[in-house]
Image 1 (cartoon, helix red, strand yellow):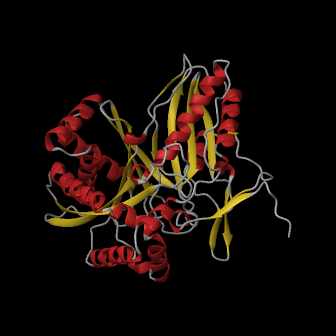
Image 2 (spheres, helix red, strand yellow):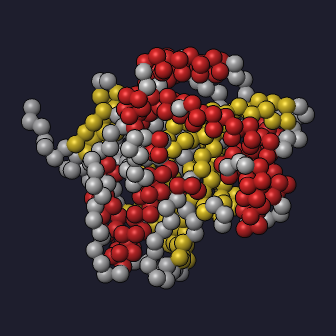
Image 3 (cartoon, rainbow, N blue to C red):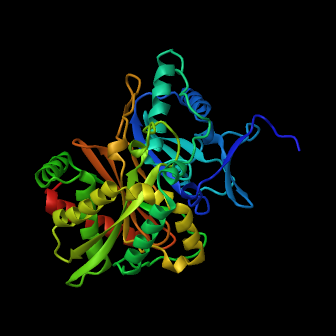
Length: 426
């Protein structure tokens, strides 16, 4: 059999392959105001694909799992300019089919010199950090082209980044990983958290998410940072406190204290040796679980403190790295015993600390990018975005397969009420 030397491929790690069957999208969006040359933007898009060939790759099934494969003979994704608004928004958050391109982008005119742009990257090959880096690179290239310059040098490095999982599996011994798995299994077995009961169709054919964006006002952002400073928390932790307090009431309004689980993403790039550049397009995030005891009249600051203490302990002990190193075993266990999956109340991730900012040509302005990735199963997900200290948006993604639009709206309104109670009116 003749091997085409232009083809590049590697086996996918378990921490990447876990996203292939659900086709999990990492969605980014923002609004632009000013003159925009869509032909030049398409040129910048093609330059981005040249710089990061993995964006034109496919996830393909094999006898032992999935392979990430770049075949230059396959058609490359193009910037879509033909969709209408409803099609545009639905297509942005649609799952990726197995074997389909791993990225898509679309630009939608809203009005004269006003545009919406969506960039969607398969979560198997990217996390929030690399997705935001791609968006920033796209606009920096467009700005260079608009100024009459060249697209700039391509980044150095491998065409296909090695899985981050390999780095951490080499760092920990088999005994380390087995001890982590045993401890985690014990903790998960004892959990029976409060969750938002599904009220949707729970049937095939319902994909994507109900998306609601909750923008904090400048005054609320100022007060949030003041609370963070006064209580020595992180903005992520305080946001978790707000979200869990709202979810507690939405899931069960009766008095009392209930346990809820909050899953948070931890960026592994700075925890690698040497640190992995943010421009590397690869899935490099681990998930950690925090358990919070939340009363019906809970103080969101106290709930956030519970989450923050557990996240800090996960980082201190190195369990963030062990979590991704143990992914093959965790995935094998999930396949054998799907009923034993870690019970989740909500997923919360912070994109605001990872935003590189957008470089735009003169005359073109943009809102801060927002983003989300839907969680698997009947679990709402909330993503923070914006610029810490100036803007904060909470993007709520509630799976259509399990919840109605009304339930998504109810939860979004609950988050707004808790935020207003803690941070003042918008």
